[in-house]
Length: 187
Image (cartoon, rainbow, N blue to C red; front, side):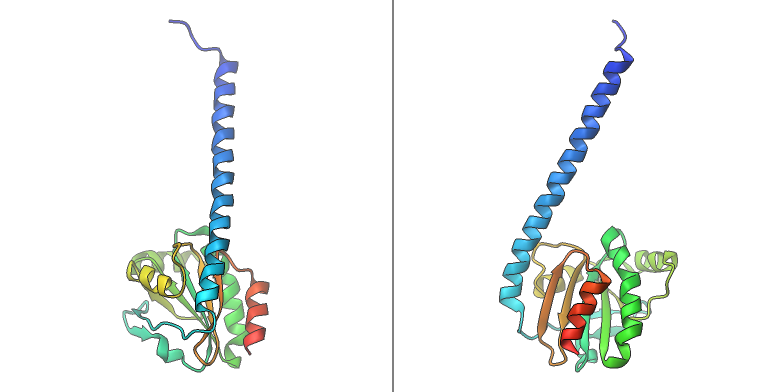
């Protein structure tokens, strides 16, 4: 049996890499399209309605309930330690919490992870998180659905006004400027 020529191996490898990159690009495009369609549906259904209740333990195991923050503008962020866009959002959320906390804004992170994974992740961060991180594990999936995330996209962020009504839903990563624009409308 003869050897396969090296240029042929390189060509086959290049074709495989190209196919993988192309598939990934199509997958990302479809995910964005589905998220946009789902976001419009969820927005039409939930914007203006009261926020669902939730109760999850914080990092110290103490139960925290949504009602604890009644009267504040809430930024409820569903995330996971393995989610790269989620990781990118957190430093911006820390800055915004510091900037707007005295004006009645409260960020809340609900992790779809276990306590150990969240602690490990937070230790790796270059910033100290200044808002409650709740450990939702698998139960957070149902809560995210109740907040309009039927697609299971992460990150997923919901802004709630001082009256407890949902005002904005966001599939995927939110920039600091996007969050700030939404917050200013609610203050």
